[in-house]
Image 1: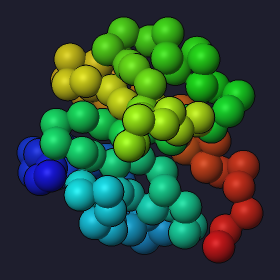
Image 2: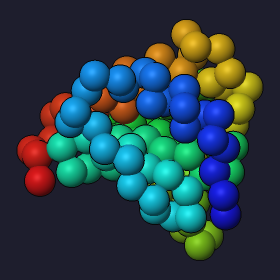
Image 3: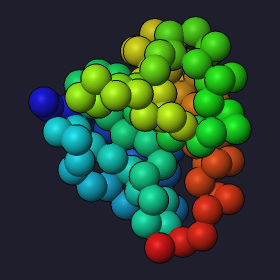
Length: 109
């Protein structure tokens, strides 16, 4: 599955000047890696947000967020965000912040 190039560009703009963020093709989409761990990504036009177990339920309660399931199995700590949930730059920044909060707590690979 391809990923939305426009969303990829928005994310690259958000992380410009941050060499610790790397792009990697994964899951048929694009993943942004932070210190060797998946931070967030794009699959089709959905944002994949890795918020971790502590923020998982709160993230699911946000508008346009849903459980991320791959091959019929939910991936705890990850949510899909449909385009209306990150269409505004402010909303995208909120998701980036949630993902960074979890990922900064992890030891770099």
